[in-house]
Amino acid sequence: MIDRRQFLLSGVAVTSLTAGCTGTEDGDTEPTATETAISPTATESEPSFEPAFDSFVDTEGTEFVVDGDVVYFNGTNNFWVTNETVDRQRVDDCFQLFEDMGIDLVRTWAHCEAKGGRCLQPEPGVHNEEGLTHLDYLVSKAHDYDLRLVLALVDNWEHEGGIPQYIEWADGAENRGDFYTMDETRDLYRNHVETVLTRENTVTGLEYRDDPAIAMWELANEPRCERDDVDDGVDHAQVLHDWIADMSAYVKELDGNHLVSSGVEGFYTRDDGEWYYGDWTGQDYIENNRIETIDACSFHMYPDHWGEGFTREHGSEWMREHVEDAHAELGKPAYLGEFNVQVDRSDETTLEAQLEERNTYLSSWYETANEVDANAVLPWQVVLDETDDHDGFQLYRDESGEILETYAETAAAKSDR
Image (tube, rainbow, N blue to C red; front, side, top):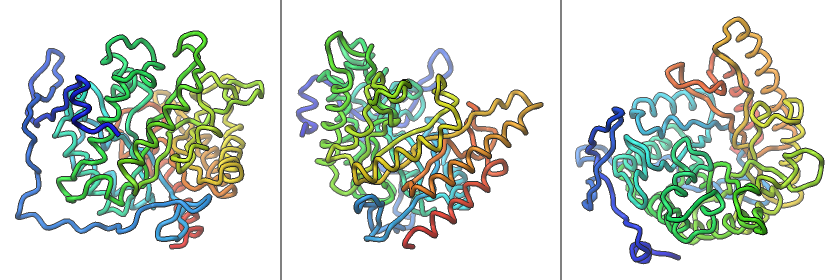
């Protein structure tokens, strides 16, 4: 294991950031660095924290279990709750909505790179204490609303910095493949993982690795190492596979309590004539999840993004084969970490018809999830209202909530609870 002293000696500075901000030309704010850690926000007058969970989510064969009892999760994504500008009331309001809808698993980010506001890692190896304190609050509130969390530790995409930002930070790095193989990027990633997992929450007093509200760590959101991401002659799929094996073992070394997932989209390496069964993304759903230190099989589903042969009608088959492969071939739980149908909200004349079509597919997919015993399903993404930005994948309770709430009853009935 690379400890903090070794990381410092590697030439990458490790400091924290205060909550103070300085203005930038474009109007954003950026925290200022300091070597002095900020004090916890909790005061002696505040009531002591009482955790709602006293047991961790575990696996037993193909099931998620808590204290040996089988649990099926009805989840959602929501990255807004960790956005660098969102306030605490927004977190409370979102979590109250989830509780009201019977949602009990929330997938969100435990990362942010080179952004303003409360971004967790605004500079390489530098962590923003204000951002970490906000994450502390979010994790503590999960207890208040009986929510478990899936926390992703980096993103393949650049929305919050992600792997592209690590590549920009590293001397000599040129492509995504370098993120997985270069010592500098691997050390930076390990440092971020250690910073989060070993942090003592300023609200709960628990280190993150000791907090049962966290169900699972995802190594990354949708990690890929595509053919063009490596030099000629380099096995791109092996590069990604080795990184998943190395980093899942590292997380397990730091944290023996929590489940670990790769966070992959679930592409195969079969020669079935369609790109999503080929190896160009570098993912191999079976072999990536066969790794001993991977506890649960992640897969996603986006007919409207993937296109080129992946139709909405194929969604149920995609779900079925992933769950069945996880259960029968690998003997592990499977969870659909992201999925949805996109709608164009700018076209008000067709919006009602679009939503009706979306709900038809969502209903069908949730029925399939029940039939094949998917261990958790998490659509992208349940949000509060129209103040959250639109990408066409937002789910509002008054439009699709009944589908999720019905599935909450289904999942609860199948669970030993």
